[in-house]
Structure formats: C-alpha cells, structure tokens
Image 1 (tube, one colour):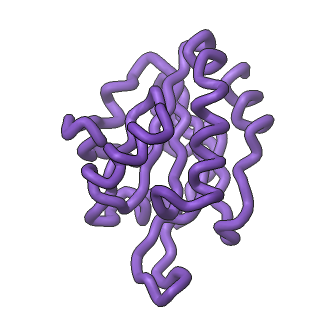
Image 2 (image 1 turned 90 degrees about the horizontal axis):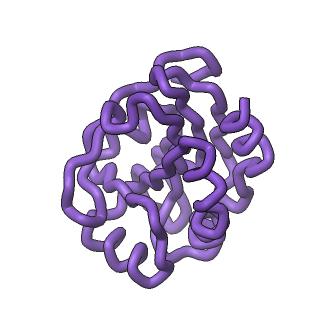
Amino acid sequence: MTLQIGNQAPDFKLFSSDLKEVSLSDYKGRKLVVHFFPMAFTGVCTAQLCTMRDSFGYYEGMNADVVGISVDSPFTLAKFKEEQAYQFPLLSDFNKEISKAYGAFYEDFVFNLKGVSKRAAFVIDEAGKIIHAEVLEDAGNMPDFDAIKKAIEA
C-alpha cells in the first residue's frame, strides 16, 4: 500500500528507546515528522537522523515533533540515541507492522536480511492526515529535508 498526501496516517503504538509506549494519538494537535530508517548505527541512517537532530529547534518552533522508526529493538535504539544525542524518540517497530502499514518496508534487504524498514519520511498534520510522503527505494538516498520543512510551514 502506498500512502498519499491527504490519507489518514495509520495509527501506531510502539515502544520507544526509553521503553515507553508511544502512539500517533500522543501527537494530536501538533504536526509530526516520522522518519523510517533501515538500521541503527549505519552511515546513511545516522546522517538522516543527525540532520533532524541538528534542525530540532526549528521543528519545535513550528509546533512539530519528530520521531524515528526502525525495526531495531528498543535496547539497540536506546544506545543509538545516547551515542548520537538525539532529542526525539526512536521507536521500535520490531514486529514490522507499522513499517508495512506506511509502505516503508523491504521484504529483502542487503546481506540477505529480511524485513527491514525503508528510508522514508512522512509529515502528519494536527488532525492525523499525511501532508508529505516520501518512501525511498534506494537506502543510500536521503529524504528531501527542504520538502519536509515546506510541509511543516504550510
């Protein structure tokens, strides 16, 4: 399933790197930037999330929150978050349900790994509708950060 601008964002309830359950409804009334990434501690994933870390004040100032989602365990994500000083929650989609619901899922990935999140970025508005959707087939590419910012500003 490919999500489009204007679709209702699929709900989620995932455990964070802080071992707290986080849901889409926690962000009602605020915009939410959702970054899917294949794997913690890899080069492009680190760069993707570090870009959001370094822009975090901008998003806070625009009534927007940020989360990162991967199929890594909450414990792996906790270490990744600590080492990179991310200010936003990293959510574990260990059961791979949310990555699939957002159309951000590789059945087969590099090194014969099965079931990994694709690199993707979504912006969800205050009412839970998708206002930016980008799913990248090539995990070596980065999301369009300018388009994400424009969606937040709209």
